[in-house]
Image (cartoon, rainbow, N blue to C red):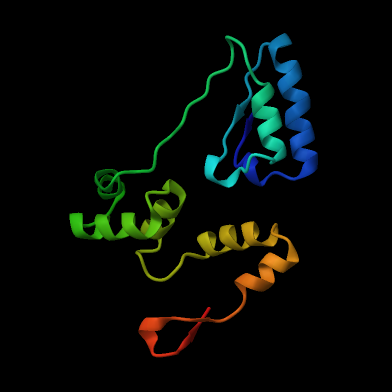
Length: 145
């Protein structure tokens, strides 16, 4: 069973993962969980689950961000374009592939939706703060969101 982006999982999904992770050693099956370490704080419920996974059957793989060269292999037209996409996406594979799929024009709707989903999980006070206009010093007082 594969559960992707477990860092965004709701309580019911985390309960299912918790249940499966306790029982998986007793059945001829595998459980693959994917998540971003950067999106999982120390008190996130997923940390309790991953902390309880131990033993010889458990394998953990950390995947680094994509390199500029990898971005170019994925489809950037030039080294300069690959470097710019890498700078903007910080090598995040999801962001890189979505930017490449849209030809680098604007923020892809899939990326916008992913970011908005993360913002939607924040407390109302944090969302209010993020929605406040910001004055950028290099725009002569212009407001930006």
